[in-house]
Structures are given as C-alpha cells and as structure tokens.
Length: 135
Image (cartoon, rainbow, N blue to C red; front, side, top):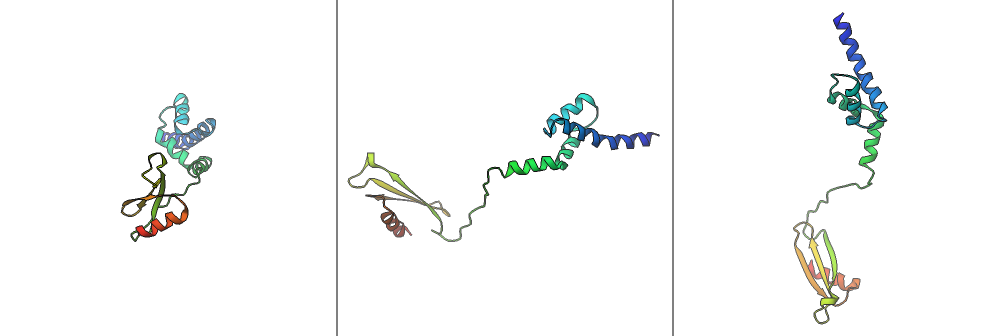
C-alpha cells in the first residue's frame, strides 16, 4: 500500500504545481512556490521551476520579452584595416582656430586608431576628401 500512496503522491504533485501556477495567473516560480508552501509541504522550488519551464504560455511570454526590443545583435566582423570606421564631425565654433571651426574625428573599428582632422566647413564633399586622405 505504501507504494500506491507514493505513486499517487508523485502523480498528484504535478497537478498541485499546475493548479497553483494557474492560480497565480502564470505569475512565476516565486509566487507559485509561495502559494504551494502555504497549502502543502515538501514540494521543492526546483520542481516548480521545472514545471514553469514546460508551461507553454510562460514560454510564449518569455519569447515575447526576449524579442520585445526588436534588436538583433550580431557581432561585426572586420578583416582588413580601414574596412569599417566611425566618423564624427565635432562642432568647435566657440573655440575656433582661425578659419577651422570643425573637427573630423575618425575611429578605425579594427584597431581603434583615432584620427582627428581640422575642417573649415562640414559639407559632405570636404568630409569625404578628408576621409580619402586618411585611408
């Protein structure tokens, strides 16, 4: 008879966890485990955690949360020097040096090498000419 009781206990534990998890409206392992502790004994937290991992609705909720930002992060792979860089024109009009009112800051991605060039104006043609002289 002890075996039947133990088997019944094993069969009823998932039902208890499931019902308490539903009672917390898929609230998570801490809420479900607290509710289980208030009503039952000897149901470990890891069992609740494993059940919540198998819950389809909670898995959908986790998937939505992970992709909510919509940002896909991929590492940039660079093989050659000056293949990829970052350009920032810096406004220095309050500290101008003669006719030079802007700085062109270029950072090469692979080596993080920085180049700073003075600019009199910042139209695209002048910036492009300075970039060509850098590489």
